[in-house]
Length: 285
Image 1 (cartoon, one colour):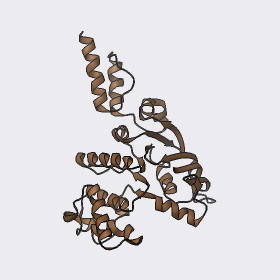
Image 2 (cartoon, one colour; image 1 turned 90 degrees about the vertical axis):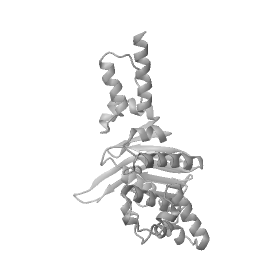
Image 3 (cartoon, helix red, strand yellow; image 1 turned 135 degrees about the horizontal axis):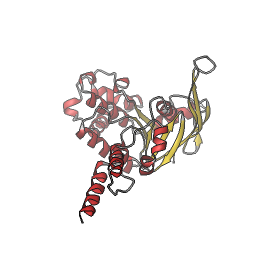
Image 4 (tube, helix red, strand yellow; image 1 turned 45 degrees about the horizontal axis):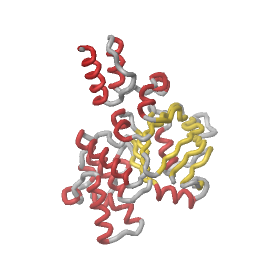
């Protein structure tokens, strides 16, 4: 069960001299309990893809399916898609608007009829999931928070809706190291609960930590789909997509050029350090 984009195309300002094709024949799927990382350069179509997957934009071509049923071709289908999906934008200011964090996080559940103790419990639970203590933050204005805290508050508002699928646009941007660790742990827990998660990111360490599959988009098309290691090792593909290889991969390439015998693939600093240590140890013997 999941979301499927089937041959999706989208053009901004169609029929005008300023028409711009953002997506062209995109096929992408997201299953429950799966974490997919979407990578691409600026202007590659990532944000448009998220908007269509969330039911915020209607595809000009192709279909959007939820659990095998088309949902982009009718108002009732779009409503079902929107109820199933939660989206976190890259700029949390786009999602925060209420007087207090408590009201902001509770806005969605309140609109769906939750009241009283059940609503309060839902808000506290969502805030706790993102590491915001409810007693400390509930009555604060969201606009007095730090950038990282604002991102957490916006994510809490999404989680309070109990979505089946999460679409996250650069979710760890602005978070410090403890915040990033908290976020990665939260994604792992949500995945165990069966939530499907699509993460737009430029961070290879995040890909290494989270992704079951990585999809690379360039020029409005998906140009690669597979495991993170294979994607990271494909220098030609990354260059064509305007992406920089993982720093660990680049370090190994430089050391190989200097004569160190190293395997071709490593995406994380820890993995690269282990490979270098083994290679140096072997050389000493």
